[in-house]
Length: 112
Image 1 (cartoon, rainbow, N blue to C red):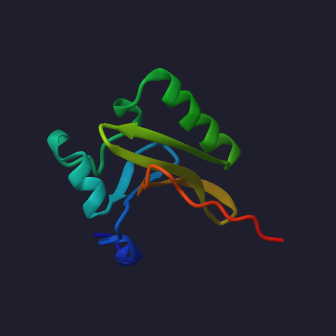
Image 2: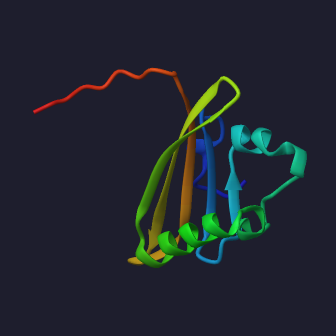
């Protein structure tokens, strides 16, 4: 494992990191387990794993340095997906994706 990712290795959410070309640099244990049927994806290009509409969103995030968030549901499991650019020397260096299981109903607090 590359140094610097120790904090994410055993988090209770899936963490995937790619570089600016879409090459997967890191997947924590939960992310690897999620996609284990495909074998090791580290070193693979994530564009090969996504539909054209998703590929366009990834390209947009890499170009803009922005973030994207949405929820998905598969079976009885609901997840929040958060994708955001990471930077090196002030330039977009790739993307980080966090995939977190969330309860069907979540509390929402408004703070002032």
